[in-house]
Image (tube, rainbow, N blue to C red; front, top):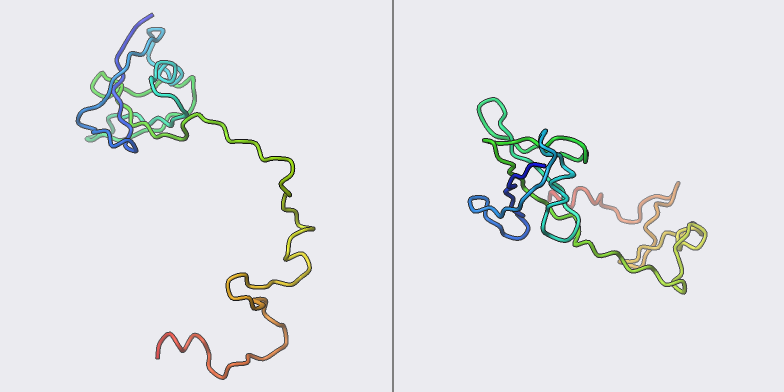
Length: 142
């Protein structure tokens, strides 16, 4: 087993790219895999990892999502920008006494599309002329 330091920062935590955090990654010695990085990552929760790599004359960030994939190295270091997906907490289950919405119970199922903001029917009436004499589009321009 080999060991290497991975350098990371979490932009959402106001970490500084110029002063990254570090943690030790234990790997099999034939390169570092994403699963090795995730196993050593010190923060709780679920994260998305982007790894810095050299591309032509500059550096780019490469998303690695396959656990068995080797992560790219930059100047012989693992450098990663870590994006938090969640804190690792599970959502509370919905109580069984809360009714669920279904197409049959929807207020729109009856064909009436009342505008909940203004309280008027927002559905266009087929075959009926407009009630106002002005075109609403023209009101925008003068």
